[in-house]
Image (cartoon, rainbow, N blue to C red; front, side, top):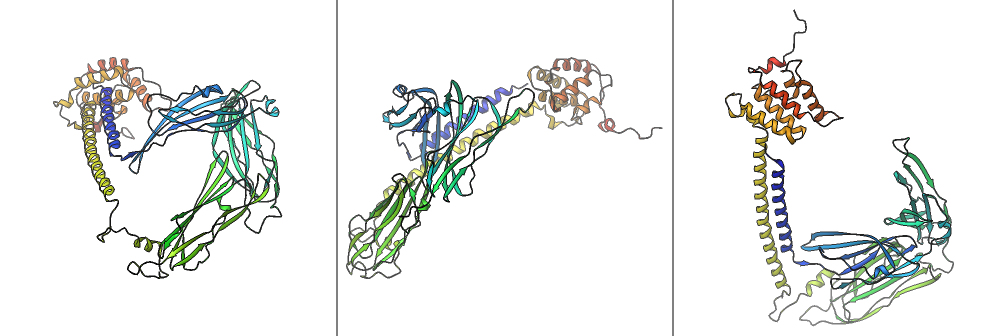
Length: 592
């Protein structure tokens, strides 16, 4: 009997060696390793006393030995636990690897607490401020082991302004098949913020696991906005029911006043936000250019607690002696537990067609500051450029209306003193091609090695499988052939019955029966039992082996020793070869 564990060990070793070669080849073929520092972040900045939160420390490299020192963190926070995870991937020829430490912390006091900078491997994270408030008295009086809490960041909100809605489920018991309704409003837009937060909190000496969901709600109509309370449907353990006892809990609805647009707001799109910033960048930065040159104006808008779609896209008026080519704006809304932040970048290319002074106009946008309750205006100043004519030998003095930024870029090709176009990046391109060819060659060698190892392992496994099957596929019906060595088949079956599972015992029994009755027509336990006398003690043992393999309520087969003993007795009976067709033929329907 061949030991399968030795085979699996050998295959695992070969696979591990191949994996090591892949890892080394990937490192060799990468051109650079990205490492951008040691970063600290938290999943919650505003918490209550007796609540926990998570501090995540990330570094852009694989760390196998050593951990960040949390001694200073322990001055204001209790470390409840920590875990480490590593990531490794290759993107566009660059190796990206990182290690994260996630530390669960609990504040020791109220107030503004600071997580100090943490040093690790010569790098330092930034400090993080945490606001810890007292437990509200209304919340502290709750002694239930399962309850909801809902909260909003304000009781009055402007139309289309952001309202933060928080749902917390406190549970001190085990529940199953939980289903929680999400807020739905016809007169508002709702966005789910971030992932579900799970942390611990202590109330009145009871330790709870808290599940927190955050939403951003943007009311679209003035008046009273009613947020329906969440409803939990779940089951708790109950000995009288297999599925537990169903329960359902909820809390009170919340009503918010939605105020309309102020009367002094100008006839412009309504924008309600605590902060709206706009910055611009010019390329070239200087104001002296020539006819045919292009000017690129890049404007970036950043809005807080609202979506970037509220800011209208720029209008581009026609300018004298200037052709305007705006690019497609790039917009993005990022979501965190603190709300939605919007950003849009707009680029406009201006191509000058005639000499003289040109002025690119200013831009301004009005918005309502929801913190100061005042109207504000964000302005971007205009810019004037002096455009000089070009030499006749270089280009014509007038650029036609068909000029485009792509054509202008072609006229800016760098030339050397001999009049030929220079290639400032030729050396870098050659170096890239060299490393690419070297990496490809190493990868081909590695793939060839892996294929060879795989083929050898597969061939060995096939040969061993043939030995385990006892040559079943090669039965030729010749009693004198080696495959029909009944004694060897019985010895193999006896060894299998020592420590092998029922599947192997069943296979060994089939092979022995083929040798014993000298026919390859035996493929099932029924083919064996039909050849045995009706009073044979082997029949119930073989039925138990069948039940262990195929019955839905299968029990372990523990009669292997008894099976070997009965087979020894059966071997003492000499049998002649039996015609399989005669064994399986049906009896006459109407016997004479």
